[in-house]
Image 1 (cartoon, rainbow, N blue to C red):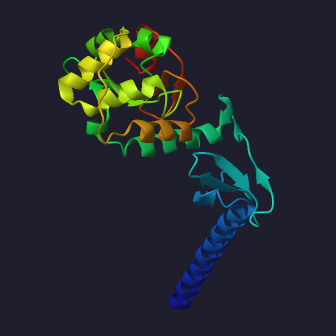
Image 2 (cartoon, rainbow, N blue to C red):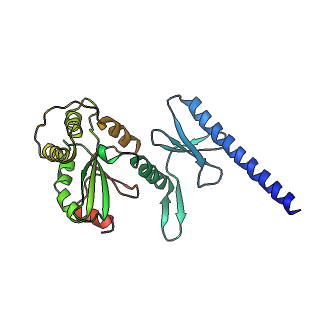
Image 3 (cartoon, rainbow, N blue to C red):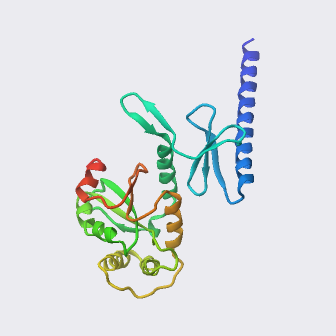
Length: 242
């Protein structure tokens, strides 16, 4: 009898998995039919029973029913005792940011390492012509001194044909100490000699857009939280738990 019960349980679990896969495939197909430009990266059960979470390659998070007929574009909140409204959509976006940024190797960043032991890491989407990006850069030495490693990613706000994109290409064409030196010079207002190479500037710009970056500086903490705009060094250290 135990063997029969176990077999039945396994059959039910297998049927449930197949049914879930069918729903996920159906939802993805329905959204694709709506607009061929919408590429679905994943479909999963949403925290709210009866809804499914859809993550697009644009970085957007949507919610739908099991038929894909009804779509909800917005933030999903949960009321948690002692915490109030908890933004579940932003929590999901935080994990997406962590996962996507983890794919960018160190050699495609401009890294200002912490002095001594690294206690925290700050990833910053930056534009060398942005006033507040320059203000933040003036505090990089202070951040490094507190054990915070600052890693720059490119986000030329004006796009591929902007002056900032050209300057940032020159920076990313350099390596190591020279790359850091060029970043500092550009952020102090110096002109840089043009350089042409295979570089990730525009790829990082597009990635930033996918992750919700709309302006610079955009600071991403290690847990995936996105802070839009300049934050003073001392306040950043507090937010990073230092």
